[in-house]
Image 1 (spheres, rainbow over the protein chains, first blue to last red):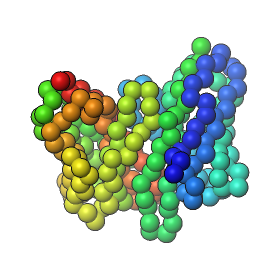
Image 2: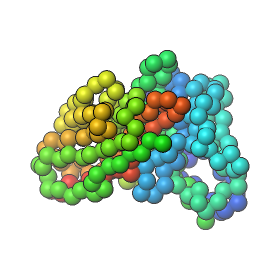
Image 3: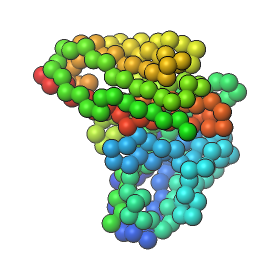
Image 4: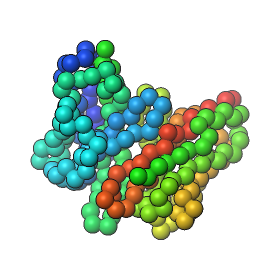
Length: 116
Length: 114
C-alpha cells in the first residue's frame, strides 16, 4: 500500500516568488494535515482538512499561505510571496477519522523549502 | 495551549544498551499519544500509538507507556542497535477545540554506536 506522497522533495526559490507543494494521502483517509517543521523543532500544524473542509486553519498565515483539497483527496499548499523565514520542511500527513475514532497519523517524506 | 517536552534532547550510547526516552505534556486531557521516528532529511515514521484509555503499547523492541494523570510517557528501547539512530518525536492529540491537532515535542536525537 502506498504511503503519503509529497512532491517536490526539495525546492529552492528566491524570496518574493511563489511556491506550491502537493500531497496525495493514503487511500481512504479522510483527514489530511499540513505541518511545518523548522530546524531543530517539532512539526507545527498549519491546516487540517476533514474531507474537503478545512476544520483547523487557525495557525495558517493567511496573508501569504493558501491551501485547498479538491474532491477530498489530493491537496496543495501555496505560499505567495515566499519570505526568508518560510524556509522549513513542509510535511503532509493523513489519518482515518470519524466520530470518536482517531487513528494513527501517517506522514509523507516532506518538502524541504529553502528561500534565498 | 498544550506544551510537550522531551528529555533528554540528545543521547549517545553503545550498542546493546536499554534506553528510556521521556515525554511530558501539560494538559492531561489528551485523546491519544504517538511516538515517531525521524531519520535525517526524511519524514516521520509512526512507531506506536497509545489511546488515552491505554497504559502501554509494544512493538518488537519498543515499549511505550502512558500515565495520563501525571502527563508523562516513556519510550523504552531494548537492546539498542546502530540502526536505531534517529530523532524520536512524541506527539499528543488533545481534546477540546483543537481535537485532531498533534502537538509535538522537539525530539530526542539518539545515536547508537557500534
